[in-house]
Length: 383
Image (cartoon, rainbow, N blue to C red; front, side, top):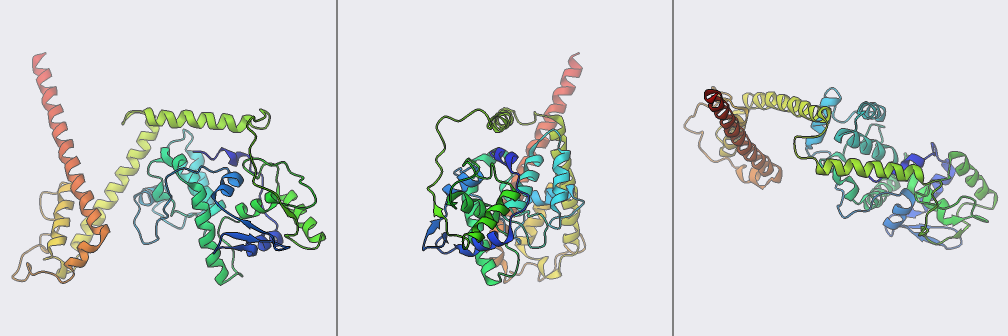
């Protein structure tokens, strides 16, 4: 996935005074940290790549809005007893550790946990699920621009925090802190530079750095060092662990890309199949209940009828979902004033497209199933 550097993260807490000063010094409008002696440090994606060691691919990460539906959130709810948003990071960690054979949900749990703890945590302390909409294909995680995501989140969160700086900052504060202690040097550099920048740093060393800056007259008075340039020839010592991690990860990703559909570890397949089956059953019941409880005003609307017919066909129901409510009357065919509004909603159009695609898949499945049965009977007669 490209996050092997997290194995070397040993920082459990950050000093409050230094963290507050660093955060206050960052101006979101021009992405710049304003330091003492009229010095300033521009913050960009390249800094994130150095400090965090995150992938910087071509695919942008789009955070789901809270009001938007996400298939993976519904699937994840089946893993957490129906919960969709009030899930603690410890619960996510427990589920991740139970994925002993890896698999897609191990990677999704890992990303949600990392985002929730290091980059975009919530004010209520629950795990942040908004990243899930980007994790349908986990093989592409390394191809995403996580550096751009960190920068976007930092700017957004700083704007929110500025409105009330007495509340906790819920953005990537660890990144900002480590960028500062790496680029701004007091007296002389005491910690060797590396990628990611947290190598060598601990909570104790960060507190010592805070104390040292206070003793010299205030935070931000050191000199600004240039961006770190990684040596062309790396020492083997100190890098073997991450290299082995990366090699193993590459093997897994290559295996996942090369495996034909339907093959792979049986337990991973069964887990995914069980989740989809559970989701299908739950959704089917909800659709039937919604149709049975639909307001009389919508029953004659052509848009609703088309969606209902598609749902009925997908579910394989021979009759109408609600016979009593589907009885036509003189006014049932009149046009509804909000019909145009229905089709102007992109989500409604996508829902109908997905329903029609599902019908095609269902018909193809039945066709193949019938052909398989016919072939089986033909082979039996010939024996």
